Amino acid sequence: MQHSTGTPTAAEAERIELAKVGPCMACLVLQIAGLLSARRVVYGCDYNHAKSGNRRRGHMFGYALCVWHHRRHPIEGKTLAQTREIYGPSLMDGSRVFHETYGSDDDLIEQQTHVIELRRAA
Image (cartoon, rainbow, N blue to C red; front, top):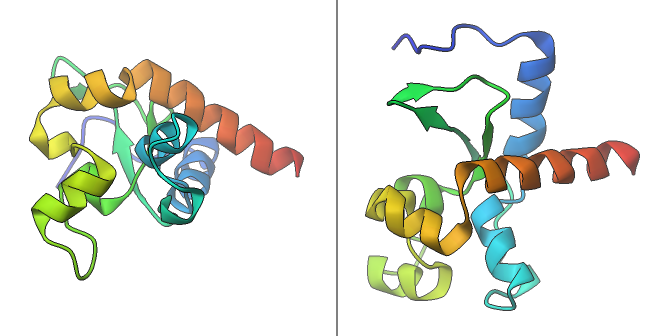
């Protein structure tokens, strides 16, 4: 499948790879809010490209999401309902409810950038 963003540059590829090792930005929002324990935050994620007008905004405009938050795949050993009870809505539940719960794409991109900067500084 060809995407509107083309092949990532070296800097874009680095951002994608650093994001994908985790943590999930939606899980992190829940942890910060005191709604999810640190041990439940998922590491090892998909990279969600933010869109505008149903077109990807570019490789630098994305953030990590676990398979639940990105694709609504339940946690191993849990049903969809149990996973949603623990982790909240998935992006597949609709963009509006997802962003009302976790923040805008721009909020999540900013959070992802901050997480990457902290990893680089460590």
